[in-house]
Length: 396
Ligand SMILES: Cc1ncc(COP(=O)(O)O)c(C=O)c1O
Image (cartoon, rainbow, N blue to C red; front, side, top):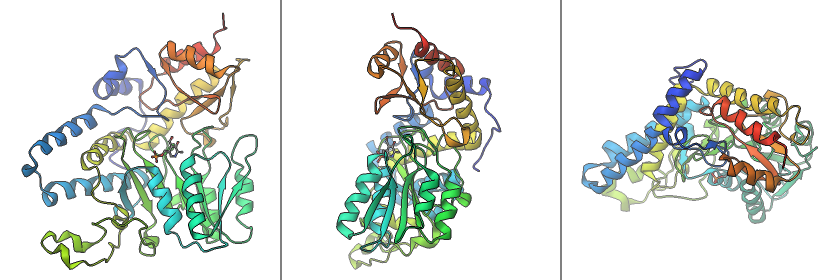
């Protein structure tokens, strides 16, 4: 997928990329392991932001037709390449929540239909679907977790329960780092005519997702974590044959071809685009989305398969480093196929340990009383070793 230059990413490649794209991190003395919180902008994205900000100081030098629309189309193409979709299936958005809420409101769900979600989901799934359920009358059924993790077998069994019409699920859990088998779940949903809506915020960018094998109907992802993109960016994938069956619940002024004719805007013709642009609420943050395109260019050059391998190596190192440490336990599933790049670690006093790590410049996050480490491809093995060393160090 993409314009991939690398099969694997070597330590030499990393050194070069850190110098060229992440020099602030490389020279900071900080060990940044919080990409599940906020990813850093690579230098090329910052350059794009500056270029477009400069264009905006002279708005007469930029035209919608010549510059902005083609630039946004290029970004849609890049998003599509990232997951093996067609550009017509991509809408540019502002965040993950928008796409999830759109799915909850636009899918044909009637009173008494059941939507399955699982316990411990990030609020954007829970709130978006609960709120739509209150308005449309369908039911949200929450599947209990098993040992703190999503129980994939139980989820698949529950698809056979009466009136189940949709499943909304995170590909990778923000809290535990568990990555679910989308191909298996997608096939099970497809076989039963059940919609599958995926929050891919903690997966796309550090793991490879191929739309051809995962059978998702709708996927939403924000840009500011693993896609190394500005806040307020993201994209939505909607399966091609579903697009024209869904009316956008939020209707912008550029939802259809009529608005392309600026000289005839008052002819009002609410015919939606037949592609996913019908879901875009224009005017979007043009400069930020084009900068997202620069970050995606970097990811596509590296290739998500190579990035996934690299992230697995980094997280394996962390997991193996803590294997014999009695005071820590790994919450994230051990099997590499069941995790992406997040490693969640339970420690006896998470607040104190978190403080100690932060004082040592090891930037991580604390979620649900556990410590979350989230290395991206640009992190180094010695950074992981540093985190391990501080985690296993005995308290004075
Ligand atoms: C799984 C998941 N979904 C969604 C979000 C946030 O989404 P948004 O892009 O709407 O800010 C997060 C943020 O931590 C997340 O972890």
